[in-house]
Structures are given as C-alpha cells and as structure tokens.
Length: 510
Image 1: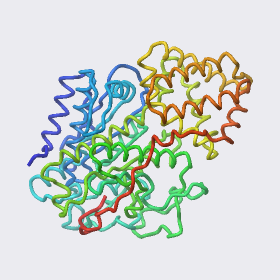
Image 2: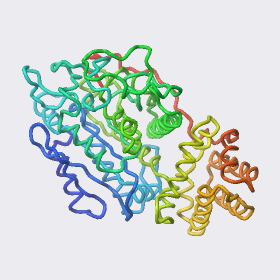
Image 3: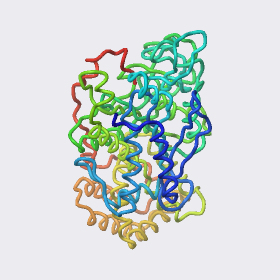
Image 4: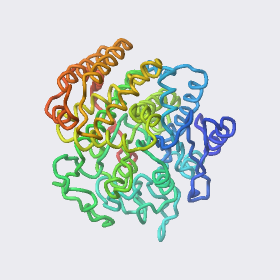
C-alpha cells in the first residue's frame, strides 16, 4: 500500500526533529493511545520570537482516512524545503512565493498532529480497511471503539443526527466527554499552546466546514448558547426550533476564511469544495472543530480559536476507493493547499510588526478592542474588518521587502496605537500625509487591482477623518462602508452538486 504506516509517520517526525532542530520540534503527547502507542506532534517554525500565533492541524482522527496524515507530513517537508532554499511552492496551479512562505514560518507556530489515532490506522492497514474508530474495548459488549470526532466536550452525549450512545455504532460518542486518550491529547495541545486556528482534516466529500454542527447558527440572540443545553442525555434533546448564537464578526471570519480556502483549492486543479456550517452536512455533537471554537465561550480564560473541518477528496464510486484512492497525490495537493491557505490567513500583520515595537501587549490589545468590540457591532464596521483582513497578507509581503516601507509602517502603527489609547489625541495632518504616502507606495508595489481598490477606499476615508479623535473616527467607520471593488479578491467558488449521498450513509460519517 502506498500509504505510510504508523511507524513510518512516527519515524518521519523523529527524523525531521533530529536533523533540523532549528525548524522542527517533536512533542511526545502526554497520553499513549488505547493500545499503548506513542502519539507525537511536530512544531514547525523559523526565526525567533515568543507568544506567536499558533495553528493546530490534526489528521487521522478517523482511522480509515489514510490520505490526510501523509499529506500533513509532506506539507511540513514542503514548507521546510521552500524556506531553506528560498523558493516558492506550488500545488498544481496555486503558487505561494518564497516571501509568502517566509512570512508564514517566521510569524506562526505550526503544530502538526498527523496521526491522532494510531491504533485505528494500524488496524485499517492490517485487518479492516474501513475501520473508523479508535480501539477501545467497550465495557459489557463485544463492540470495539469510540468515534473520536464525537468525544469532545461540546454538547457531548446528545444523540442526534450522526451521533450515537450505542457502543456498536460507528458514531459512538464514548462513555464520557474526553474519555479517550487520543482526544485528550488534542485538548492538551489546545490547553498548552496559543492556538488561534484549528483544523481537523478528514475525507471525503470536498467540503470546508465550520461551526456549528449541533444546530443552525444565528447572530441576534446571545442567550441561546450551548452551555445551557442539557448534555449526556443520549437523546435528541435539542429542539428543532433552537439556533446557536455566534457573534456576527466570528461568522464573517469563518465564512471569509473558508471561501478563500475553497478558492485556493479550486486554483490547484479546478475542484470546487463546498463551504457550509457543519450541520448542513448532518447534525453532530462532540466534534473537535466545534469544540476548538466553543472553548472561549464556555470559559473566558481561553483565547478564541477558529475551528474548521476539511473533507478532502470526492466520492469515487465505492467507499473503498473514496477513502483509499490508488493514487491520492492529487487529493493530497488539494489538502496541502487548503492547510496552507488557512496558515496564510492566520497571520496578523499588526501583531507581526507590533511585537517588534512594543514591550507590552497593551497597545495591541487596544487595537483588538477597536476591531472586536467596536467595529464588529455594525455591518459597515465589519466590512472594514473584512477589508483589513483581506489586504494584510499581500501588503505585508510588499512591506517586508522594502526596509523604508517597513519603517514607515512601524511609525504609523506607533501613532495609531497612541491615538487609540488616548482619545484626546487627534489624527493630525502630519500623520495623514504619512499615511497617504504609505498607501501610494503600497499601491505602487502591487499589480492586484482589487488590492489597489481597497487601498483607494482607505485613502478616501482617511481624508474625511483628519483632525478627529479616535472615538469620532470609529463612529464614522461604523456608519460608512468602504466603497471598494476589493471584495472581488475573495470571490466565492461556485457550488457543485455533491455526490456524497450516492454511497451508503452508514459507511460515511464526518
């Protein structure tokens, strides 16, 4: 079989960490699998710095999904080679420049858990090619295994949709939330590291999924929150009329990032992945993607983590061929492009530049407050947030290539944070001229017409707010949308008719 065994994956992790310790760190996770196997994660980064934003990529949650663990290992190697050789990297027709890769590796801590369920993978490769769960011996039954993607502490044990409390079911949620060492390892990584983005990579169906899985999403009634749902009932206890709250800014972030991921996948070889909340596939509870996002809502001590699920590859006519294509390389390129797209969108240019300027976190926290608690409260304000998020990475690439531009951007960031933290400080003509000059220089450094349109929108509104204190400027942005054609840069790929219902549902669960 062309897929790596469990020992080969573990060996690849160990070799990378041993041979290239400046880039890779192997982390032996605190718990062995049910059958006693070591579970290892790999951290990839370049350069120095602490308190970096982290991205956690998990593969192999479901044993029979063999393609993705290999793709995650290969992605680590691809990024390392690109960085050390100073070259860009392409998957099909989607390319990232050497500067893109450099920014990603020097600003993020990339945590890779290629094979979270080694017992299950070993069983698939030696005994039952369609085994899904881990290898737990369930009490008082001859049935084996827990579905690790139903075992997380998010509406756990609510048996509706594709979640069951029956130990013999393929979607058995286990005897308790985080009852399994394999899921506790994922939780440990989320607890231990600063994870801002999370993805659990599955197959198949060609989907990019985001929360929620247990109920439809609504953005108007924050009293409807999963923490009020009775769990562990082993019944379908969520009313059909119930909708789960998500702040509008978070829903915007999920959909914007997901559609860009789908666009980057499509650029590889034309495959059109569908973007949707998980419940549109079918209702689920206890999933890892939902849990990663839900943590900060259940416990304010946790940072917000945007949790996604990818479903790589199409229905291929049979269950066997869909999970284990004879040549998975094209699908693996889709997966690697999807993960790299998420990594790129997890970079924060303000944080990357700001951490080199400020000894304390307070100035950056002040900017986040403006974004998350002020601009996020209106549709116009959220459009400004979306504009910034779509331009920051390409502009960062321009800035980092030119030391003078970087110096100008740093000086403006200092002025901006001072202006935000002291409301009596006004945006004076000197700062305005510096900002307008920087915008012109940035526009000259790119050929992207949509990006230039976004910059022009910023320039237009800057001229309208000169001489105003921060509070008045925010009020202006809350009322006035950016008039820009730049939204074309995040064009959504067309939906396609999905074929996943053509095969037996009992054999196919996310």
